[in-house]
Length: 42
Image 1 (tube, helix red, strand yellow):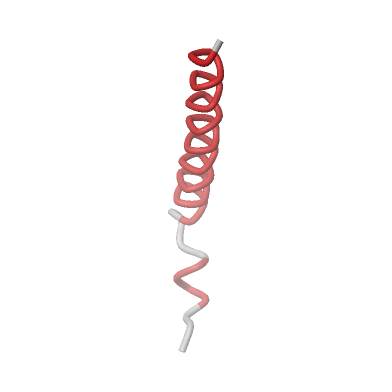
Image 2 (spheres, helix red, strand yellow):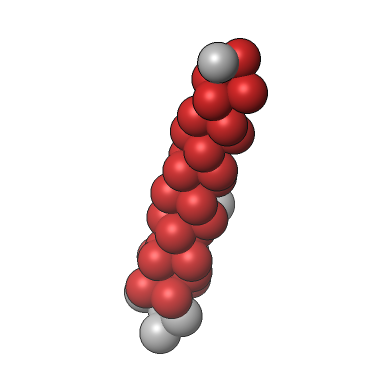
């Protein structure tokens, strides 16, 4: 059974933002690595 109290805890926003930020950083790191790869080929 899922408890709604867990979703409404005060830390939910911090956890949501931290997870989203980690995803964005990973996405940007992949693009930076690909850009570096392309520059090395020139």
